[in-house]
Image 1 (cartoon, rainbow, N blue to C red):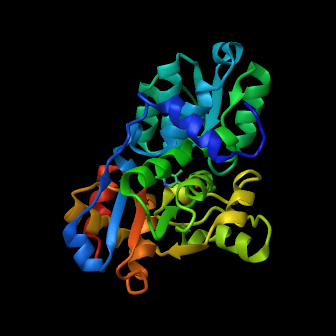
Image 2: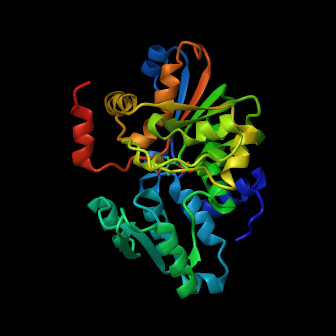
Length: 323
Ligand SMILES: *Cc1c(COP(=O)(O)O)cnc(C)c1O
């Protein structure tokens, strides 16, 4: 793996590597939606990606760049969610042994899916252990290649392929709204937008309780926060990365936030209007776009639906909660 800062060329090469392995997900449109919000809306449906989120793009790209020796030795990653499944599935497809460090109380469905893909799961106590330390130790002891969840040029380039497809399929856009956790998806998107849609305004959207990206932008340096309490479990990151932050700082239009109540409301909206199961984190883009529908009137708006992995009991609860 090469550690120089990623460019749009890397996104193009990542797109070639994942072709035939990742889905080219559909771009959903709806006349009712356009009439309701007063613009033209294009939803990139990464909830329909393999394993249920865009994370497969980055993981598959990163793993397919390993040397034969690295492939034989295997990879290690830590995650309680989509990155775990993305690395486990990519590893199975590329015949690479995978070890995933997951909290002992990770959602049963995610744990089961990760094991089903053939990964070795190492559990740790969420309240006393540091998963990155454990993964780094396993990497050192067993010679495994560490695959970070967002802060790596190959991960960033892979995640940028979703926006590349969106611009290719939807054409010119005036604004694009992108969920933001550690910034892999947003920085990759910004590289694609810079080459394919330089006039498009690109917004990162974070949970209001975890607005470290917004603070970082305002203060001009990476801000660390405690793990935020939010239903957007895919964006509970504590800080942007050394690779993602500079791309975001230099290229993003702004970073916006959405509340848990807005996310739950967008989950209901996706279910009823688009017939789409979207996890809370996947709703960040729409939540921010919808708040601004008045100023976006008449424009062409892109929204990345980043994932659809949500435990069904939890989903039912969130859909029926009083609002
Ligand atoms: C990981 C994830 C995000 C955040 O992506 P980053 O690259 O960490 O910013 C957003 N949505 C979903 C569904 C995710 O799994």
